[in-house]
Picture 1 (cartoon, rainbow, N blue to C red):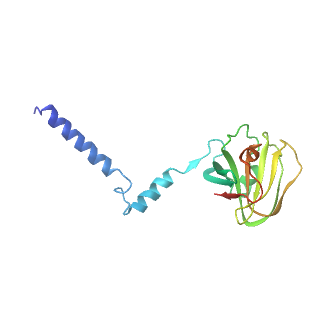
Picture 2: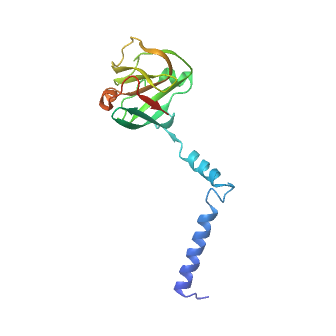
Picture 3: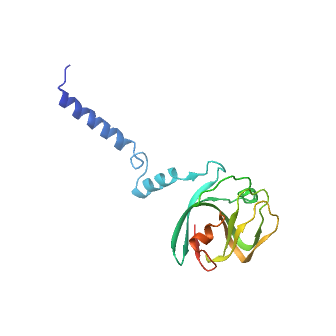
Length: 173
């Protein structure tokens, strides 16, 4: 059968449209737009290529504005113990968050940590307790929190000063 070219193009376009709609998350088993959004959100869950840890957005709000970061989540005791040890590079808008539940006094050191870090201790109210700025690589001196920390954020050394981060500022993840 010899179909005219325009009719064939229309049939092919319709077939592609049906295939695209049939493969969408909503049509493939979700019964609501919320289900489709959840499927899309789960598909976008990022994993860091070096650590294999989940990467989440984090926002730091200072007097000069809000700053967006993508941070690895060190959730387990093993992940928290390793932290950023042996890491050779980290971008200006990257970091690692150490959630602490329940909040507790914390102290970090720089054992086997190659790059200088700003270590930001965060209270249960998501306010910065204190900042250990430009922690020295390989230094074994404990760097303590000024109170019970609900989280500790590590950024590349000097970044806290660049954004004007200080105690009382807000950190949300």
